[in-house]
Structure formats: structure tokens, C-alpha cells
Amino acid sequence: MGCHSIALAGTALLFSVMSARADDGAIIDRWYSALLVADRTELTDLLADDVRIKLDDLGVVQSKQEFIDSIDEWQGAVAGAAIRHRIEKTEAGVTTVIACYDFPNNDMLMQETFAITDNRITASSQAAIAENCNGY
Image (cartoon, rainbow, N blue to C red):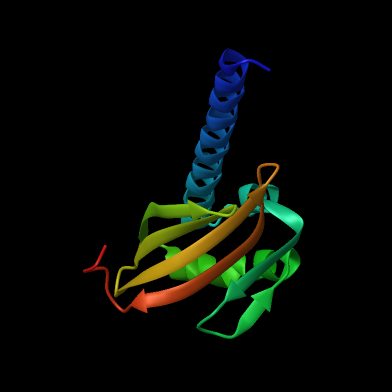
């Protein structure tokens, strides 16, 4: 393999990694859009069947079905809210997001992680950073 071929292979690899990150960003955008309106169909589609969702502050790990079952309660809490998010970093297949949940009566700053494989969220964790979004 000549230098030219190696350079092309390296460039192709770089673009595939960049494309994967862009796809992960699109999946994460879809996640927050669906979460804001409690769209069970979209959330179900975004989650892998064997997903584990870790709610650090509550010491709870939810399966896909447990998470979807909790959406009724969430729908009431999220009414009139806004969710802003930004990707902080992607490392070893895990994307870290800072999210501001701006509810009508309060807001909360969260750090959330997402592992994504084949356009499905395979693992997620959520932990509160602050009881307001001043640091967003």
C-alpha cells in the first residue's frame, strides 16, 4: 500500500468517524425533541430493546419498557417546559450532553450520556449538575 492509498484510507476513516458522530448528534436531537413532547412512538424507536437508562440521582436503572411506562408521569411534568442541550464531548463511543430542563416553575441542569449503536440508544445516564441552568 503506497502513501497515497494510506492517506486515502485514513481520510475515509476520518470521514466515517465524523459521520458517525454527526449521526449520533442527530439521534440525540431526535431524543430531546421526542422527550419534550413525550412522544412514546419516537422514544420507543430511538431506544434499543436492551437499553439501560441509569437515573443516578434516584439510584434507578430502567429497562426500555420501564422507561416508556414512566412517560405518562413525565408528560405532565414536561408540559410547558423547554429543553436545551449541547454536546460536550464524544469519547469511546459515549456522547456526553449538558441539558437544561426549563420547567414552568423551576429549571435543572443535567449531565447525560448516550451510547449509540446502529442508530439506537443502547445506554444512557442522567445526573443533576445544578438546580438551575445558570451554568448552561
